[in-house]
Length: 78
Image 1 (cartoon, helix red, strand yellow):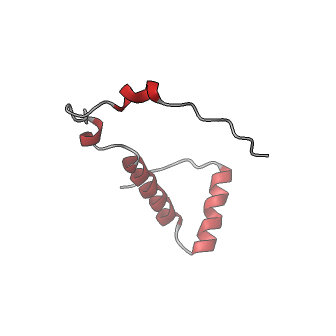
Image 2: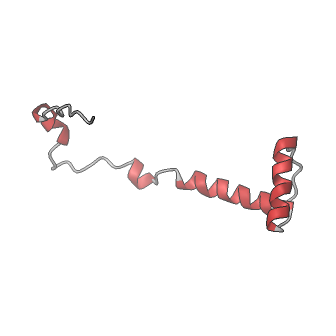
Image 3: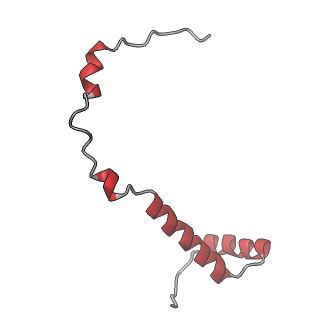
């Protein structure tokens, strides 16, 4: 699949620097960048099983113990 993409001058210079540094083509570097972006996007989302988790009905809600918590003491560090 072919695309035409506008890249501003600053980004274009950075891309050319990477081409020189790595010896890879612009096309392969842009493809790699897109693959990494897409992988990151998919990894940053919870799967449906976790999103739809409602907990265990029989378990005690930990929120019910909040009023028993003692506030932390203020320690002098210096």
